[in-house]
Length: 94
Image 1 (cartoon, rainbow, N blue to C red):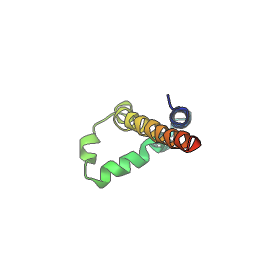
Image 2: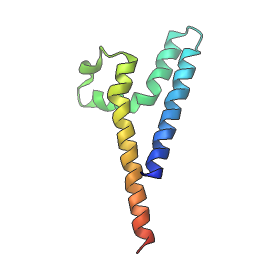
Image 3: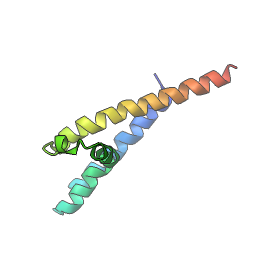
Image 4: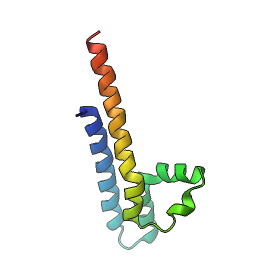
C-alpha cells in the first residue's frame, strides 16, 4: 500500500468533508451551498465541459456527481502517490 497515495486520498476526503459541512451550514443560502458542493469537483467538471461531455452529467444529483467525478479522482491520487513512492524507493536503493 502506498503511504503517499493514502495521504493524498485522505487530504482529498477531508477537503470534500469540509466543503460538505460548510455547504449544509450555509443557513439556507442556496448559492453558498452550490459553491461549496462544487468546489471539490470543479476541476473535474471543467475538464468534462472542455471535452463536451457536460450534457451527459446535467441530470446527476450531487451524490451521483461525486460518484462519477470524485471516485476516479481518488484512484488518480492514489496512483500518483504510488508512483511517487515507487520512484523514491528506487532512488534510495541505487
